[in-house]
Amino acid sequence: AVLAGVVELVSGIRRRGTDPAARDAILIGAVTLALALGLLLVNPAYSLEYFIKEAGKTFVLTGITIGVGIFGGYAAIVAVFLAIAGLSPRRADTVAADGAETSQTAGEPA
Image 1 (cartoon, rainbow, N blue to C red):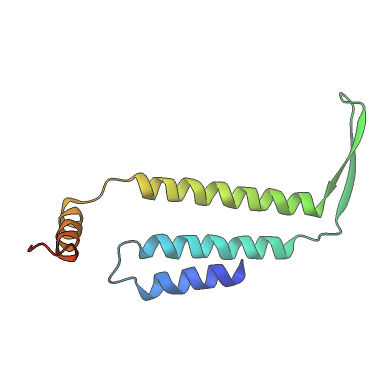
Image 2 (image 1 turned 45 degrees about the vertical axis):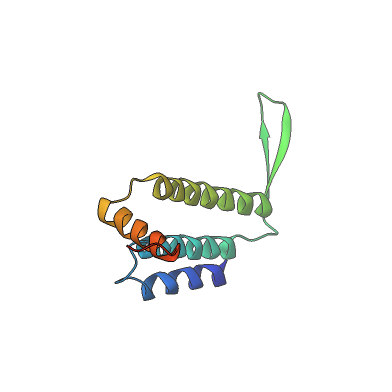
């Protein structure tokens, strides 16, 4: 997670002035680094036994369960963010520029 976060963050920072999607890369890189930090702070040997009276049972909360919960929260945040970014309407000048690039690569004059 650390390597993926650093790569995403650095690539976003390097493309900041030229690519409108660079801010998405910066944010996802930062959130991925936060995931790595969160997972590093969780002790895998952690164990907490607790009793729920209504269920009449004793349960155990472990560090692994906490780590999975942190990863699930990360996945939900990234999925919602990328879904919003993917389904957002594009500006007309961006669509026109993409259309010109597509027609030039297809061998048609612009």
